[in-house]
Length: 347
Ligand code: NAD
Ligand code: ZN
Image (cartoon, rainbow, N blue to C red; front, side, top):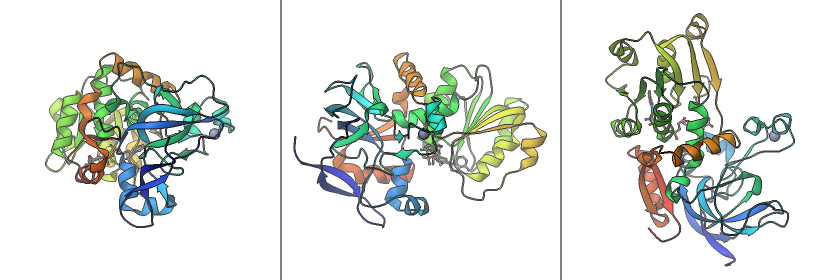
């Protein structure tokens, strides 16, 4: 194996990302080295690219970015058991402490000491990445690599959507980003009645329809209240907030039925106001969502894809890694679903 590899590096505290030669990382005793086949671009990668407030607070350059990936195990740490060289894997992007109350109780998604791959440690926009063996998820042969590459955000969508019983329920999703689009598909897959999704981007609303959304709202010229009226319902039973937009969230609160339940995934701007009357007088439940369950969400996602869930409808661009700048431009434009970059040269 070569001593150096190509990687997308945030090399300094400024906008941009560069392709660079860096040393191939060495797996620790409980880690594996994965030869990366494909890496998908996450909104987080775009934040890091743009060097926004959150990245300035969080990222310590130089850092190899990226956490949505699939590849093959190419080296095992000395203490790793249960995995073999050559196995095709993806991995959970949150590395947990393993010793806190929640980790000990099997609730690793609630670990307060989480470290993010491609955020707090070197990531997967590289020819090789190291991850703790406990974070690996085996990919069955029947699932194509270009889909396995974005199981991480699929997991955000699944963890959020599966928070509540959806059978026969009317669901509102605010935000048809890649995660909202996948969530629309999950709601349809598990048997919701109306699956309504809002955005300001018609391209993405069409993708949500392709995944099974029954009704789309472009809030630039239609209102959620209008949709409630049009459907002849009293309000939504379930809300999935996936836009990170405070206005969208408040519109959601106003269109919920009494006793409704809301799962909040989108990152709200600091200090966003909330119309508490809506929460209190309607007896709404709000549930914050971070990451995915380890590893029950991964299991459910895998079985959904194996039993016909149309995840492929969310993949709009599959490009060679050398065209990464184009990929980031697409993500910034919003004229895309998931964008997957290939390292294998076999596109
Ligand atoms: P994204 O930014 O691509 O999607 C957000 C979508 O919301 C965009 O399509 C945008 O056009 C749309 N939007 C903007 N204003 C809107 C409005 N007023 N009404 C309706 N839609 C509006 O992001 P994504 O990757 O799909 O992620 C969705 C959200 O979840 C983001 O806020 C992201 O930061 C967050 N996120 C949270 C977690 C977590 O663990 N909690 C994990 C991943 C992403
Ligand atoms: Zn922990």
